[in-house]
Image: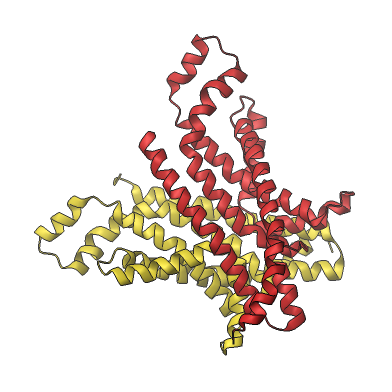
Length: 215
Length: 217
């Protein structure tokens, strides 16, 4: 096969799974990150403790180990799931832990005066968070969230190791059948780069757009 | 569900593979430290071509997955007559990948050194080498030490990827044990716990360092 045929073949077979895993895991990570980040700022010691355990466990162990654990160990306890579910769960939980720290520090970086002002204006706690604090904190979080999205996208290549048929998995299959090792892995690197690079640029642009006239 | 006897039986095997994990991390980290600095200096070069090429390579490495880079080094290099041991290939992949991150860290450290320092070096008639080793780097590196330490811990946690290129480190050892006994629960859990036991204290120590550094600078 020529280099272009290889690229087309790889894209046709693995791109959807790679992108699907990225999007689903990113949504899960963002949701978990916001829940975790807000809980970390709770007045209740117990809630803070629970989140701290979650964050330290998922940040302190390796993503690949978590992926294997969810895919190979959980079935022993009767929790059998598809490779895609395991992949989304592992990556989502792992990046959710990192995101919760981003959310926490973003919210903490909003000036105290904003909280005081919203109390003075008789906003409820929910209103204060939703209308005043989070919109400002979110802008501060954007650069970090953008970086994490790229890291998350790259980390989806690990799912090939639990037999999910993403780009990396298909490259290995193609390598075994055609033995065009050099072209296949070069094509694979190029494909990842061509997706990740515009993502990096896009996040930078979004950042600029959001901060326009604000900072 | 969980068999303590079995867990204690497999623990020594897994723990002994920890040396492979730790030495891969250490060698990879030293490589990343050195190569990262080279990237930074090349990107700062006055020669536009050198600077752009280095910048392009760094961007490419940063925007592609480490796992695919490992496959590339391990499976493609032999096509050109360069067959590497799994350990060597793994360490090169790990070191090269993280050198691009460290180069960014060095850059931010160097940019935080005031322009006056460069002027002073010129005024004192320091040559380029002396300017870097005596004036710029001693001021640029200490403030970014916590970030560099963070990347060390991150690299440590990335070493299980080396099992994909057949290096028998701690995850691969656990996998092998699991494959022969059909019991994955204990071996994989032990690997997770070992990672946590090593990386958590390290990150706590790093936070202390960060506090001390922010007090000083």
